[in-house]
Length: 319
Image (cartoon, rainbow, N blue to C red; front, side, top):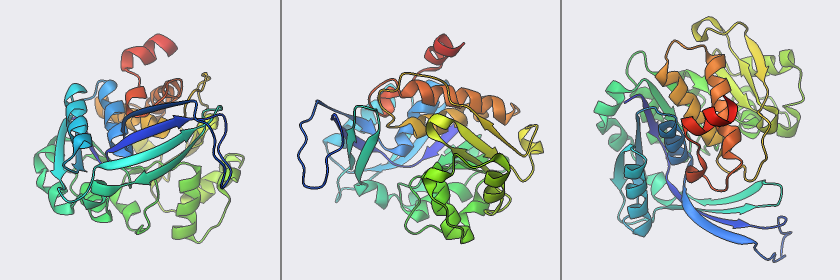
């Protein structure tokens, strides 16, 4: 298996509206859809649709939503290992999407929080063959740490700190090779790990050297800070292992017609993992270009997991 994703599955319930309601206000919905989501599962689908053999470790309740999850994993060709949690429900998520494609989300992690370190470690055959292990933070901290520490020698460990866990342990930075926060998550990591406070909305406007210096406050780890419509920023202590020409640089986002930004960060992370696993010696910058295109194209479709484009669709659109 080239990519192993350890993380969450949630059933997404999505309402489209003209604008977000104010407290106490009722807005009329313009449409409703439901479909698979969860940061972990979204990323696994994104990876698989980019052509990388992909496995997934997660937890489900024993309900109708769990059956949907199992069927979809099989349809996408994902080798899924599910921990069954009979006393809790499968994770679910309520999403509001406004006319500009921005979203607001309410999440019940449910079974995801019961994914155990013991179950994760028991999937040793998957860890033994993985080239990239990709983890997010919609499960318990024990499962997150088990995933990062179970990776075999030479395996690339990618931590997407989304959302930053209430029980965040700064030592996780040392267990990963690459961290991929968005602006909000990066600001929170700085506050928790470096006693540095900066508004998330101010990050994208910082100069490269200033932003690079902030990244270095988190240690020697390599970071990719995703900046939404402004692309991403890359910061290394040492760019050589990544075959990058510089310690820091930016990449612009592709120009697309945004319909729904839900899952765009997951599209980026899953595609990045797939690219790094498909061609381990490929320069990080080249992998990021492809990941950015996958993320951009995903925003032209409504939904999360099912909005992930295939490799052929990305090539047809961007060349």
